[in-house]
Structures are given as C-alpha cells and as structure tokens.
Length: 601
Ligand SMILES: Nc1ncnc2c1ncn2[C@@H]1O[C@H](COP(=O)(O)OP(=O)(O)OP(=O)(O)O)[C@@H](O)[C@H]1O
Image (cartoon, rainbow, N blue to C red; front, side, top):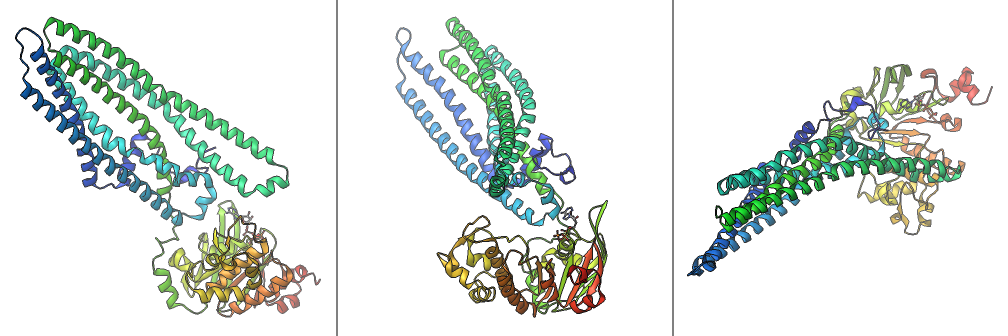
C-alpha cells in the first residue's frame, strides 16, 4: 500500500529524485542567507581553529623534543608557554564558535520545521475534498509531523557537515602534502574508496527508507481507524481481523527498518575498518621516517592526527549521504502535499473577505441551481440537469431514495465540488466566482454525523462566534440544550469531543444544531440533522430551527416525511433528477412519488 494511498495525479513531477527533493527542500526552508552564512562561517571557523590547534600541538612537541633530547639541550620555556597560550586561545575560540553555530543551527532547524508545518496546515485548507478522499489520514498526519521533522534533519548536514568537511579535506590535504607527500598519499587513498562505498550503500538504502516511511504512515492510519471504530470492531468480534492487519504492517515496518538499518548501518563499520588500516600504515611509516630523521616527531604527530581528521571528514560526509537519503524521501512526501493542486474554488486564507461579503448581504439570499449536472467520476453521473430555485428566507426539503444525490446537491452548494455542467448562484453571484470561502460565509451546516472537536461545550457551540456569550446562551436555549448542559459535571465548561462518552449521539447532534443557531447563518443546510434525536427532542429542535429559518434560506435533506411536510417547497430527487417539486399539499394532490413515499397511496 502506498503512503499516500492516492492517485499519482496529485504527485508533483520528478519528486522522487534525491537531488531534486534536496534542492526543493533547501529552497523551502528559507533560513535566511545571513543566518545560513553565519552558521557556515562559525562552523568553518571552528574547523579552522581545530586544524590550527593541531599544528600548534606539533610545534609544542618539537619545542619539548628540542629542549630535552641531545647533549646540551635547553628548554625554550618562553616559546613553549607562548605556544601553549596561543593553543589554549585557539581552542577556546573554536569552542565558542561551535557553541554559537550549534545554537543558531538548532533555532534555524526548529523554525524551519514550524514553518513547514504551518505551510502544510495552510495547504490542507486549500486542498480539494477529493484529495482527502484519495489520501489516507495516517499519510497526511505523518507528513505534517514525522516527515516534516525528518526532512529538516538535512539542514545541519548541508550547512555544517559539507562546508566544514570540505574545508578539512582541502586544508588538511594541503598541509599533509607539505609535511610529507608519502603520508599524504596514503591518507588520501581512503577517500575515494570510502566515497564510492558511501554512494553505493546509500543508493541501496533509499528504497528501504521509502518503504519504512510509507509503512509507518499506513500503520498510523490503521491505528487511527482501529481506535475510532473500536466499538464496531468489538461488536463484530473483529479484533482478530484488525490485529492481523496490524501484524502484517508491523512486520513490514520491522523488515524495512531492518533492511534500511542494515544497509545504512553497514557503512560506518566498513569505513572504520578502512580508517584503522590507513591509520596503522601511517603510524608505522611515520615512525620509520622519524627514526630515519626525515621527519620531526612533531610533524609525524601532526601528520597522523591530520590523517585521522581526513578520514573522519570522509566518514562524516558519508554519514551525510545516508541522512540526506532519508531526509529527501521525507521531503518528497512533504512536497507532494504542498504541490498538489489547490481546490480551484478556494481562495487563500480567510482574512476578512468573507465577513465583508456577509456585511453586504445580511438578508437571506436567493439560491438558484441552473441546469446542474455533476459526476464524481466521468463514467457515473450523479446529478442530471437539476433546476431549482430556493426563494429568500424559505425552506426547501429534498427527499428521495438512498443514493439519489441529495447530499451531493448540498456539497455543490458548499463549493466542495464544481458542477460539471451548469451553475449555482447565491443572490445572482456564481458560487464558482465567489470562491469557497465567500460562498461558505454565513452558511451553517448540520449533518447526520455530528462533528465535535475536543473542547468545552461552550467552545463547540461558539465555533465561529468565539467570545459571543449572548449567542451561545441563545443557542443553548433555542437548541433545547439547557437540561442536557445542566446535567453535565461542569455545565458549559465540560470538555467533550468526537469520542466523548458523556454525550449520547442525539445530544451530540443537538450541540451541532446549537452551533448552527449560534452562527446566525443566512444559509442553513440540514442533512438529516435530527436523525439521532428522539421524536420529542426532534420536534423541539424543529421548532428552534423554524425560528432560525425566518432569517435563512434553508435546504433540508431528509428521509422523514413529517420534516419535509413543514417545508415551503419539497423537491423529490430520484437517480440524480428532480421528478417532483411543490408544497406538501400540492404534491399530495398530484398523487405521485411523494404521495407514495408518504404512504398515502
Ligand atoms: N465522494 C464521492 N466520490 C464518489 N462517489 C460518491 C461520493 N459521494 C457520493 N458518491 C456517490 O454519489 C451518489 C449520490 O450520493 P449522495 O450521498 O449524494 O446520495 P444521497 O441521496 O444523499 O443518499 P443518502 O440518502 O443515502 O444519504 C451515490 O451513488 C454515491 O455512491
């Protein structure tokens, strides 16, 4: 199963090349040139300090050897103390540069992660509904969290590992050649061998990294699904089915992690072994040259330490390749979300535009569906040539068989999809031109499945009218929630949520009705809104909604004829086509489908 679980149509072109993803990622992070340069300069300064300190170390050794070995040797204390003092100063400077670089880098990484998350979150509001239908929730959550974190781990290698190790390679190689070309050549042999190995192993590791991430996302999605459907699972004794799927995903994750670890993890020990051999050869050769007198002891020491630094630099660069490999896999996942086409009906973040628009249109609007046809997929038309007029301030009930297209009609009005043919206008303005945000301003929706977020009852009701206590109090009263709220341990401040056990399904639905009342909408969409309430509560809520309806243009989707009968206009939809329109009395008089549905005939 793919992480995305969606069609490739939403993938950005060429996202799966490591180099492309890396370039893209660095362009997204926007660390700021000045900050990036400071981090790199600090890292380079610290590395330079390390190189200098090592050379001073050789000089100190030579002063000690000159002052102690041989007849009449005199220790040059002044020179020795001066060198040790300079060395200490260089070490301190290098340490403070390393500290500064570390602090700046940490902040840059954290800021980049936060920024990327904000961008994905922002993007999620602009993605079309179709994207969510085709993408698993686990995949999206992992892109927002783990992938974003992992992608940002490439920042440190790019800003620090590459410049410092490149500097080490150049300076150390040059100094080594000056000290002893023979030792330099031996030390350099390890470089190309290690680099070739690193490149080979990282190529082999990428597919395992991919599988590891996609399986992690699938597992997260599965756990989420199992938790939210746990009652159903237990009710059907289907725990074993869920457990089998979990075991399969868990096993796949284990295998891919093991393979990724095996390939990536084999690099370090192989490089360490190469380094050990090189180090041994250098120590023996250096020792022989000191005995020969062709090299001073200090120079031999410096050469061996430099050779070690050289191989360390290569090893770090190799480690960087593995990290980049994993980071770019994550970057390509993040990129897929950010580059997926926006919902063409949605405008950027809702900032003011909608409310201004609502200010101009306070009265309930006229809504007109003109020759509307729609299909989710080209081969299966759902709505066919729907013509419908919802007069301002009236209620229209849509009735019809299961799958007739009733909810689809409300989805189009909410601009979740565009009609394939035809148009929908609100007060003469095409929803397609208004954009989703403006079209949805002043619209309240109550669906069959009550949606509650984790928060207090008050917060759930005040969704969209935050801080308006009068609106909440009115909504609680008009929505007949008083008794229910009074029975809750902390009243309006009781924390509830989608999974909360302290409210029944009907009570949850009443909270969403109260939310709609509090919003004082001018367009109200009720899709089987009171289906979970008992008949008495439904009646009470119906009355509350009736009061609300005087200031709204209302679309009610219902299977209950009693609810439909209260509407000003009833539309009977069958297989995506309107077959009857009229008031309850008119339709009963006509004796058609509606009459049969009412069970009169
Ligand atoms: N997101 C979707 N993608 C593809 N097909 C869909 C989607 N949503 C609904 N459909 C299909 O469109 C048709 C109409 O669905 P819709 O939900 O509008 O029916 P409905 O009249 O509201 O049914 P019900 O009374 O059962 O709620 C159905 O055949 C359904 O399978």
